[in-house]
Length: 505
Image (tube, rainbow, N blue to C red; front, top):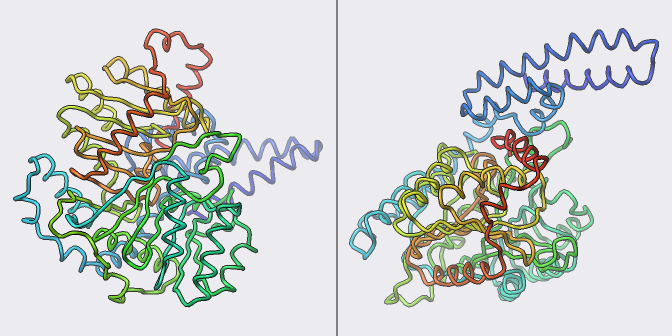
């Protein structure tokens, strides 16, 4: 069916071209188009209906096909196809669950039941363990890395210290100054005998030069491309991207968070200016989970099975007597049965007792999460949403603003970050629970992308996140309800139009 749809689109494009090139042939072409286009759109509408998607997503697609059929047809080919998803990733999901069952076998529910956690906190940890197959660690140390300078300084240092292996996975990797500096370290380490595995996403890193990759391979670095795309404009593989940012070094230290590799993340790009982001360094038990996530993705693309014990024996130098709180590394993606990150955010919001602070560059929630936030605000909780004042992508930026009036009316305080571009992705609840990682608060992160987040409960890192959030508010302006209502009608129309695409973003 997928191939037939693409062939139909190709024929329509040829007929359209013929219409403009040959006027004599034009009338015949116009007649053919008037017949083929409705048939193609009708077929597509039936396919979408039979896929049993969420009703809002189904209605959005059908509405787009009805209003702008040709554009809707093209959009579906680019972003909407998911009827192969379950078949494509079901084998990966089953294999992952079987191969890394030993990680979950280490989980003992009583580990945290006697600790000083509230009932809501224990329930959240148990929920994530059950739906994500992720263990909870009480012997993990985390450190928040604020912005690019702090992040890349720590990363470069740890890479130079590598003795056995380096595993690296990024959505966007640039061939620029910082990209080259890291590349040279990988090359040096590979030549010295360190096992280096490097994976990048085919769409996110579409501009990464072949010569760059060739240099890595010639030096002995193993390179994998996640989700290769042959033809970007006619492939549904532009969906289901690997949005993760993971580095694991010698099984003892890991990095994860919002920062890709590129000069703009060091605030060197004039278009974005100052780049505000949050990353995290992990030491101790939870590094094993980061390692497992990377190796699952690695095997999915290379067929190489890497489960030797030496890759999972962490050099744990942490003080066993110290209290580190709970750390849970959580992966989500289209290979999982549940919408793990959406359920994590929803559970955090509904369990809040005092406050919910959110920072995200994109805000396109589904109805469940939107309602939960409104109810929390109406219940008197301190709800703060930190959002960029200027966009990097206009469609989700406009769609996000369409949700603001209802939130503001409910009592949510919305702040626009004005110092530069805000790319941090975090949720802080009651000052005691937080999640940090790659997940945006939008449909694409919830349903389409492979993501990774850390759930933190009563760790020292939460204090740093709270401090950074409060500092960011000093560089942000709160949206005034009355002034926001007075924005131009054209702007409001564009926001409402963009919102129609919300289930697709």
